Length: 313
Image (cartoon, rainbow, N blue to C red; front, side, top):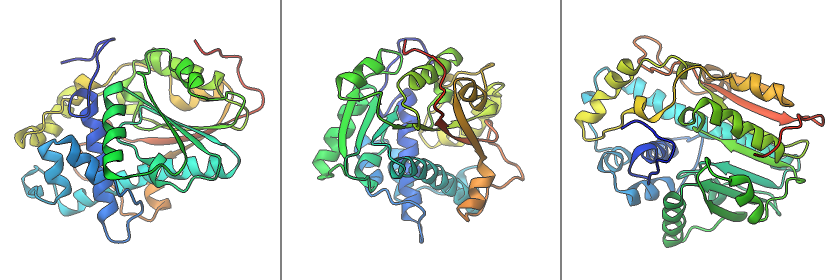
């Protein structure tokens, strides 16, 4: 089923399934020897969602040889890819708070547990926004697990298509305070115009010195839907029905780095291969690469003093 302007989901349906998939990747990346990241609640959260495929995946009960062109090297590269993605956003958030930001906003937070696992400086407040069902599930599950936030934590149950700036303010957010914004794995699930509005709103809510960490996925413009469905066929054969072309928004959109520069941010982009080298991880196999989205560029940006007069609409 294709996306609509008023769709919703939990962590076992639609876009929410991809959040559980990402958490499963973090769980596996945390379990390897010499792990780059440590997310101790990722596996319990995945088990609590209850999608059999992901539970078997984190427990090592899936036969990877059944997945077409899968190989131990490709499987390792996929896990490493999730490790470096997580590490990139961790590092951006912690660097921003080390430089003085005391507000962190995680947009479409899914099963993200940064509010519970990162060593935040004293006085940091972490805001999380997502669908009401997602926020309720994660908050209650983590409480059952006995997990405690490592910062002041405010979980806000609101979808990003609604007036989330007002919801942030109502929960104590101060636009005059430097903020670290995280938009991880989010933009491809937004229509192009909603992506632009998101950055306009972030800019209007940001004090100079605030930061953004996000991704730019050029391949979303001309995603090959048939190639994407073919790549996910082995997953369907094993009981996981994720139809990525129906979950994302394709077609022309403003490149993320260009848009941010135009509204006053100083932008740095790091292609995924560069992060593999930065974190000293084995890279993605290129021979027979079937990733229909192609390359990913990880984007970090800081707001200069002369920001655009964008307004939070």
